[in-house]
Length: 553
Image (cartoon, rainbow, N blue to C red; front, side):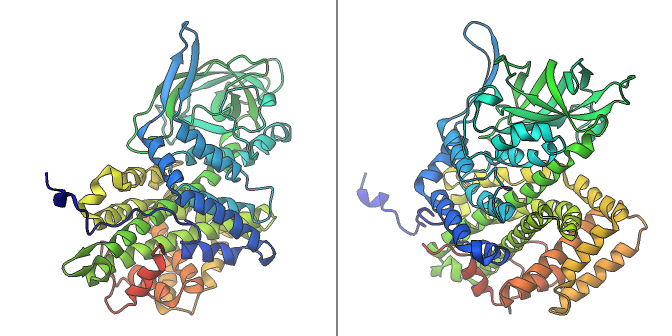
């Protein structure tokens, strides 16, 4: 065959060998504005180190291999003993080990810890999103454990450790540990109060034996889990749904009964294991009070929901970076795609959505730092803004990634491009920790029961009032929506969407360049845009928006 038929032209080079943090203008600006100047150089340095690793050929290879070689369940050893272990490809362990060593399970031992960890999570999971699951749950378990100081003293140093030890060992033999979670059951789904897993008390205070089935157990290879189970009422207490810490290995080195029945065959998130598990006389330690399981574990749920926002924003950023990069190098119809007016409109619209998600995720991480420091207003803001952001940002991820894939044409539909992996991953965060309806209804619950949450939210968006007439009109419409309680439950999604858009608009008006804020307010709040990406008003400065999102390689 003639060699000339194999000459490759008009193809974009791989997007590799760059600093994922430094190349993301929206992210780096958000980190700068939320970080005290005395810590900024150190924060930039650590995020730059992580960004270069994430953009390296090695980091990208780890991500691809972890997805091409999904975990394998081994229920028994060669002799027939039940072991219930999950084997992972070495690339999974390399990704997870790098993440732990970079502090992605440690948000509470350093200044601006929540922001630093969230930005690092945003950067590093662009290599591969699946291993973000155990990172997120390990990070998020800390608030729940702190309801029991004795347990926290044992486990928190291991959860915030920079050491990754994959072997299953007793806690006192591990310098670092990972946590998982098992709440969902077949009959209840999101309605965890319908759980039937039973917890029978032992003679020792706080100790129980659990019996039941969990329909979804996240990261079953973890060292311990937070689970919910029903305690029967007795003379010792009223019982009810209660939170427990369930270790995989008991202090004497024996395995706790924890039968992994099967791994889920999922749409995406293939590098990560999700399982169905059985408890049969499984030892657990109570966390919090009997009957207060939801209240105890809610801190973990809130933290993982915020990670859902960050993870979706991360996916969106990687999809936009790939689409803009491809369009900059690919020529069609007489010139680079990026210079074609309609393609530029699509890319600018995608970049707007990505920047708005990034700004919101980092603002909430900074608010968590403030709340951890005792700022009550920040805590009230999070109570309402987290479910609103979780609802909206995770919902926008899937259409954005699909449109970004289309920018690559047929190349984007091929596995080697990496775009199909992003697309399969894109629905996950909307489902995890409560799907869209759960989030919208939780926002309504906060509005009804916690007036301080609404006050904090209005104070936040009020800081941008008067800067853009479309934002002002959006705030006015939102207030009218909130004043009308008729049919409010059926309107919950509508309310959550409007709250999210106003909050994003307020952040961009305050902090983004004028062309970005103008385009967002025109299309998202002024309704001068269509139902698909690429319908921005043509009079806007679309070229500047696209250039801002481009990776300079």
